[in-house]
Length: 153
Image (cartoon, rainbow, N blue to C red):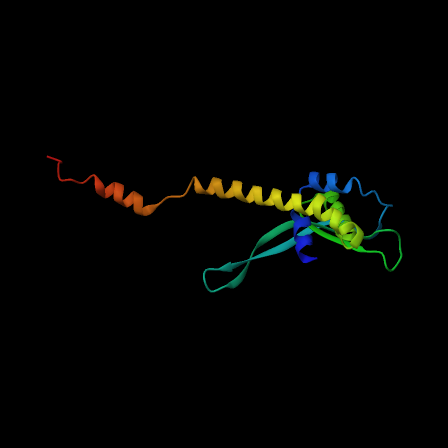
């Protein structure tokens, strides 16, 4: 469950909408309606690993129970970055549906695999953009030193 919850937290809303459209359910029982707040983000200093408060980020969270107030109904929980209440609601619904063994395999194929692919694609694009700014200092040093033949006369 932690792995799919991490994926749902980063899942784009369009993928959540598309995957959950076929899984129409009764209105959920809200345990905690979507609400937006701030969360402190920590960083680690240098190689020592000492933590420090980096800053605050906006997070939206919610919790719901599908299929009414039955104690055996799955509870879905979601935390997403930003202020998108609909995305948090869809992620919580997906979390609850993924706990149902009947729905799990279908949602693994229709939702989690596409989210994994989209996140890998985004990571690859970021890596490629970062590579364009990479400087190889050994090459720069060779090029700068390679033109000094003593023919300056």
